[in-house]
Length: 520
Image (cartoon, rainbow, N blue to C red):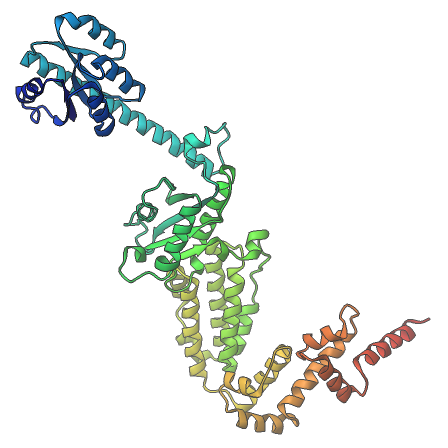
């Protein structure tokens, strides 16, 4: 503890300094006051625990120093030194909380007892303050938990008293990136405090298994965004941030809305299954719009297993991967529980296995048994890992079945055109997708279908445009775009070439025919 010795006589100050072994008593003499004003200035500057002071001093009396210091909030202890004739002044000082006084000449034992009593009193007070702070912190933490869970059914204390008077808030959850060891070994809240220069810009609480951070104020949100953009999204291998996985909810503007940001972060933590390789952060913007609004009507059906089985048997790797991508996107946008998604994926693999075995009985040994399939899917942490397992199994199957014939590949190409005619299709692009030389594919295409690629594509587009012209909801220029023609004049030219009339004439002719047919 720190002590100031104050007396206007230097010999007295030196005598008091040498009277006791201050360090052995637990004190450090941090200053000496030569008059009342000097002593008050040192109290303000040095914040001592104890002031040992003569009551009679020039400029300000000891009594005035006590009064002014107490008025300014000084919480330390004054030990007053006075002569017998000054006892009435000492009594007056007692009214300002002075509990110890010594008379001159100073007795060594009395001085030692006074400073030890002061030390004991301050130690006990410090202990009480620590307990009070602990109780207060526990109460505040409990209130924060209720706010986060939207369970604060009681009137909240003053925002300033809660230290929740910021204009904006955002909730962050963090855990270990290693899911096999979920206990985080790094104090991310501490890292953020350092990034915020230890300002009171965040709160940390633990709710269940969640490490929860409440960011407070624009500065804290900016610093967090900078940290995630530059260091966490792609952390340096082996760095502390490489060991973290975190999610964060949307910014909100009031205490009453903090639970919304917390709910975002919790939902994102559950969606960790959909993360890509080495992804360390999930943001509220990563939540699919379908889920943000009202969920999704995703239905678990056999469509994907049937399509994948067909493409495996036809050797169409491109379409097989395309279906897996669609499956991944559909699951990503669904509100299904992760356990249900795992079960659904296991069912798809088992159905495909059954279909392949039915068509090619000798390929059954390529697949794991059903129990192994289920176990493999269950032990994977991420969707991309499961789909990687699917791709490997499907590739092995296609390699075992052998290369598809020219006719089966051409059939797949025709089907691809019929399903994607609205895109900007080029022979070269399709040849590359199906692993063919474009010049060779063009010759095979013409020989097999009796017309070249562009003519076949035009026929498919015009046929679909005729169907769309029956619907009065679309204008002609809209139909041109829907079937793959960016220029409406070019569409008119092509339509007239294949039908002999314009799109508008075709629509009128069909409408007239409809009236005649429906007339009595």
